[in-house]
Image (tube, rainbow, N blue to C red):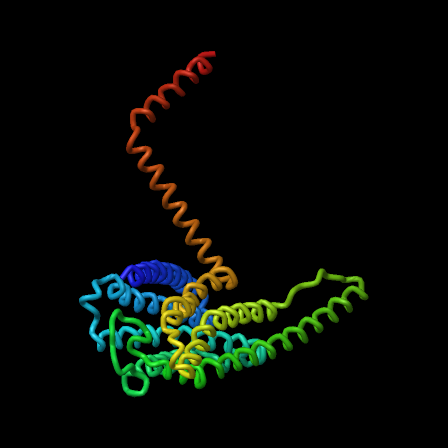
Length: 334
C-alpha cells in the first residue's frame, strides 16, 4: 500500500509539472503563431498539446494509485485510461518525428520547402498523426493477445496490457523510427557541413578582396542541434522501457513488471516534461515569447503592488506632498 501511495504521489507531481510546462509553452507558441504564422510552430504547438494530454491522462491514474486497494478500478476503465496514455505518448513521439522531418526538408529543399510543406499538407500530416496515435493506443482493446488474461489492481500499464504489445510497438514503430531519426540527423549534418564550407569560402574570398567579415555560424547547425537534442531525449527516455519489455517477453520467469512500471515507464513519461524545456531553451520564437510573457507578468505585479500601496496609505501620500511644499516655500520667497 505504501509503495502504491508513494508511486501515486510521484505520478501526481509529474503530471502537474507536465501539464504546467506544456500549457505555458502552448500559450507562448499560440502568441508566436498570431504574430508570425509558420508550419514549424504549428508542429511545436501540436507537441505541447500532445504532452499536455499525456499529463491529463496520467492524472486519471493517480486517483487509482492513491485510492484504497479494496476498491480497485475496473479492468475496462483501466484499459481505457492506459489507452489514452498510450495514444498521447504515441502522438508526442510521432510529433517529434514530424518536427525532425520538417527540419530535414527545410535544409534539404530550402527553395521548395514552402511549396511542399504548405498549410494543407501540414494539416493533413497532423490529422493523420492523431489518427495513427489513437489506433496505436486502442489497438490492445481490439486484439486479445495484447491483453492480460487476469487483472489485479491498482491500474497500471502491465496490469491490462501484455508485454507482447510493447514488443510489437518496438519492432514496428520505435526502432524503425529511431533509424529514421539517425538518417535525418546524419544527412542534415552533412548538408550543414557543406553549407559551412561554402560560407567559409565566401568569407575567405571577401578577406582576400579586403572586405573580410567575421565568421558566422549557419542556421543549419541550429536545426541540426535541435534535432539532435530531441533524438537524444526521445532515445534515452523510451529505450530502457521498450528493451526491458522485450526482455520480459523473452523471459517469462524474470518478473520485471515492477521495474518496468515503477521506474522505466516513468522515465519514458518524463520525455513529455523534457520536450517543453528543450523548446523553451532552443527555439528562438518560443524563448522570446516566454521572455515577453514574463515581462508582462512582472509589470502587472508591479502595477498591482503600486496600486495596493497607494490604496493602503493615502495619509502618507498627503503628508509627503505637504512636506515638499513646506520645503520649497522659502525658496520661492527668496
